[in-house]
Amino acid sequence: METLVEPKEFVESLGFVEDRQNTLQALDLKTIDEPVREIVGRIALLPHCFTLQSCHGHFLSSLDEDPRSLARLPFRDTGPVRYRIAYVAFCLENSPRGRAARQALARIPEIDADYVQFGSADWFWERHPNSYALQVEPARYATLDEVILSHAEALHTQHIRDLFFVGLEGFVEEQLRDPGGGLTSSGKSG
Image (cartoon, rainbow, N blue to C red):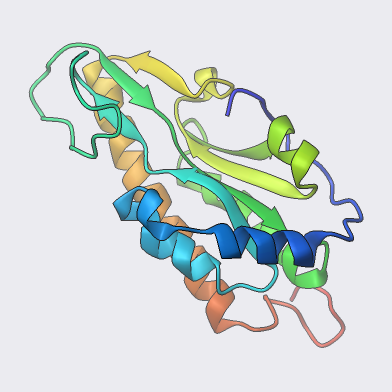
């Protein structure tokens, strides 16, 4: 996510439906970090949204640890921790439902604005206009995809990461439950 920038405004994108179909056809849930699979699978049910990439976030306490390890950090201080960020990148349709989804996603950082960011990533946007990312890491490192944290800060980041995915699950449930995406019959947010 080395290019996270402020969230960009929606633009016209005539290729959304085809991009979504191609992405969903290529989607192999087995390649996604196990704790994120169900969320990504459920996002695939949303006609106004699809995921581009995701990572559950990895906390590595030693150099020989598997970089894709999903192990939780021990509570005892084991020294500095290499953290590979948790994130989900989305492409949204430029439609009332897509804009309502963007507003809902932009509220997720309220969990802890110092550790959860919402924005656009230039390299996703170049291929998929109207793409956005949510990520979890200390704000001072918001443009990096891997950082070294103290053990105490890594524990806090892990806690926020867990809350982040609960919030994302809530977003998906809300989107699936409300076919209007929080819109009134006039197409405006209610």
